[in-house]
Image (cartoon, rainbow, N blue to C red; front, side, top):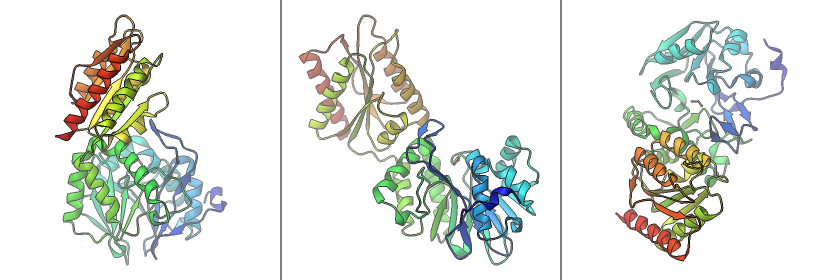
Length: 402
Ligand code: FEO
């Protein structure tokens, strides 16, 4: 066994036979472009049945923590089976070291997971494919496998422990939130909803039609689900329907009367336009978030956009193009495929003024329905220009009524 097993980490009991044996990453602040200001956890679960089974591992640097938590329950050498629900390295990075240390009897993954793992690692154990609907007896407990293809990778899979009504949902229903509490019912509701929304907006939003199908599929399986145990953040052991309902709403793309204005500015001209538009929208009763992009992370803009019906983007023209922060946000948002948005472009310029047209092209590529031609102001907006910005806010608000 590895020397790391001597570290003093302990497991947390989830049910009589299931223990959380993951790791808490208090310091991570960037998750491939997503700002994780509250850190995250990499959750792994140990099932103590006749066949001792580990479901998922952790990011590679945290393997010692995982093995120590396992050792607080059983000798890691007693692990018989390892299930890999997902090959992304925040869950499989520790797999090679765990397999080398534990030498389990068998390792399982989805069909596409077997392929993905072989394309990531040279593992010391053969990996057996389990198919949709297949089950695996652990002796006194039974695992059922539910494929979640493209949610969010081709190989993604969920594992359901029937006897405990426990769904190990992998990335689904998770959030990036490091905490000493392991269960959602120990944490503040507002924090949970914020972080779950941020996770959905930044990871699952482009896959919303598949999320809706997966929710329907799981519903049709009639699984009794008492505990939802995701791979990031807290475990849901009470009122598990709450997070499922949030997902159903986000997947349906229901928008509030809400607008997001994202912009950057050189000499406060585009900022003044943004504020005037925000004022027009607010005066028309629209919840409006004005987000200066040098101070607002792209992933926070995506989160605000999750339930918004309008997106307005502004930039001054810099070197015949849009400001770098605006280009960054547009590129990121385009990949997330937000739906059913109306919007507009705006910005100040000195002589050439290409930025507004370029923003319009980006918004059109995102299928944003432009309510008016982009608003351009030369150098510094005057009173009439700002009145036109406010009027544009009103026009957007009108469109949000329908
Ligand atoms: Fe898709 Fe948490 O990894």
